[in-house]
Structure formats: structure tokens, C-alpha cells
Length: 261
Image (cartoon, rainbow, N blue to C red; front, side, top):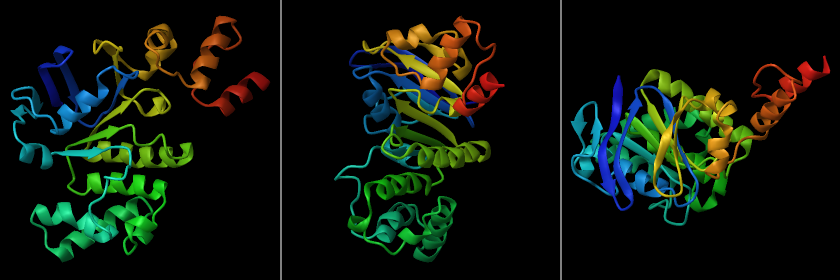
């Protein structure tokens, strides 16, 4: 079932764009700088509202409350990411706004912090957190409203790779439960988490839809659009060209073990 739909969107240099994102999938919008990703993120999140363009479950989202009640957003952490001094106050704000009591809100907050092994943050001041903790906290806050769609504007690249993958594993499980995720990025570092890839060039033009397995056979289209391909995929492509391997690899250890054997 299609849950999040973009219908004939026109904005600046984006012309007549239509996309469909399916329930429970982890989709990636991939493009180099100046490909329109930021504009799309702002439109998808409701920061820029264009009437009769964005639909959720067939219902048009035409006001900020529609977006707030259904869409969660995570951007890169910056000096304007937080409004309160204390972590608890920052996390309570969206829940109180939705009508939860303080007690119920705190219970929800503890559950989500526990899910990400961040329980120790609840009594801290935000200024006492390091940048990695702040970035993880933004992800948890975006999930508190239990949104139907989570938009992520490349927030994980500042984390260590293993930390990012731990978070992606959690988010992937939430996709199976209720969540649809759209991740905006200029690289394919987390290719193994992708259900679909929507590729854009640097002229705001939509190139096409791919699955991560397609990268092995369509690597040129990604290179031509200045998209970084993970080393293991690039290596697999080259080794297959020389008939040194006969299948695709996503894990460097598995590749080395098979060649060594």
C-alpha cells in the first residue's frame, strides 16, 4: 500500500515530480549537492507547504498540524536544534503539545530512550552532551509522536559507522511495526538498509528508482551523478569484471574469506 505520495510537485527547478513511498519501507533519496534534496526535505516535512502536492494514506497534507501529527523529522545537529536547557524538557514539549500528561510523557520518553540505550540522558543538560549524543537525541525526539513517516536529512554521517548501523537496525525494526522512513543523502554508505533508492541529478531532475542490488549493474549512473559508492561494492564490481568472484558482496570479511578459501 502506498502511504506517502508526492503528486505532480512543482517548486523552483523541480518540475512535475511524482513519487510513491510504500508503507514499512526504508527509502533513500540520493543526489549530489544542488540536486534539490534540501528543497524536497523541506516540502516533505511541511516547512514549505505546497497545496495539493503531498498525500498521506490518500489524504492531502495542506497545513502544519497535518505534518506535525504525522511526520517526524531529523536533521543534522546544529546550534538551533534545541530550545530548552534540559533533555527532559526538550523531549516533553512535543508530547505535551499533543495532549499527554507530564507523567504519561515521561513514561513514553523513558521507553524510547531505553530503546536506544540512552536512558542516562534523561536528567542531563543539553549543553553537557557531546555532538554524538545530541544527534542521537534528535532521532529519539522525532520518534516520540510515533509518526507514520520519518524524514532523515543525512543525520548519521557524523556518527561512527557502527553507531549509525546500530540506530539503523532499530529503525528497520520500527519499519516492520508501523514506520515508513525516507532518508536524504549524497552517498550510499548504508546501502544494505535501503529498500528503494530514488536518484536525482544536480539539475533537480529525477533519474529513476533503484533497489540496492541494482547498484552492481548500474554503478555508472551513480558515478555519473557524483554519488559515492561504498568500497565493498566498487571492489565487488571490479573483481567480477576479472572473473575473480561470481557473486555480489556487501561485507568485506565475507569477500576476503571466500577469496582466501
